[in-house]
Image (tube, rainbow, N blue to C red; front, side):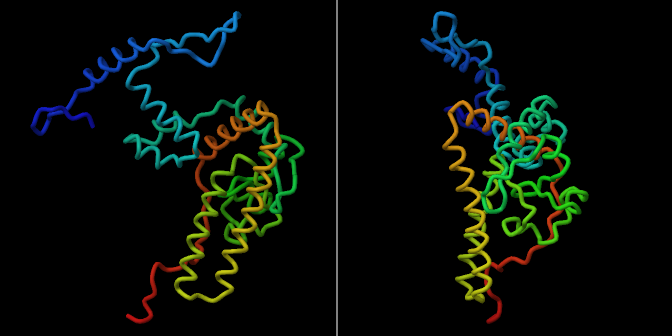
Length: 260
């Protein structure tokens, strides 16, 4: 990771040297302040002792956790032997979780992007279950913990689908995946109804994204930042939870073998 000018198998800068180099660089910075101001309106200096090499690793992991990276993926990225170690980056206090749910329940929409706020935080958590692209309120699926979707997680066509801003990254990733599948279907000359199914799902999910984005843009900056913090907290909670069992969905093959 940090090679030296010397030749040889082990010619690299060791951890202690990296730490000393980082400390010298930080100490020589002319100014290092926080976003906080003191009573006179001046920026509060940042505590330079909090900057050390291991802090970068912690920040890397914490940002992945906040960005909805799956638990076992982050475990591999961090080279942890046990997922229990990685779980430390996904933990959200019960109080913070309750506050996040209380904020998020007011911004739930339905499959058409229309406001469908949940009456209470309890209803948000107890009467719905997180599935890949939003919350689901279908009773049997809720009871099964999200593993018994009757329509194979084609959420955008379901009346029980309840997305909210915390699911935006997942929905947008799914839209990109659907577009790639649609192009593959076209390239393989599949029946029009297959292509149309992809297009209908894309349009429906995109309508949800557009509605939520417009809602966010209309909010005051402080409220929007508060909602984004709540979204990040809930994504951490979901990332640490067991993933629902997704029913197999036939996918378009990478290439046709009909002529082989």
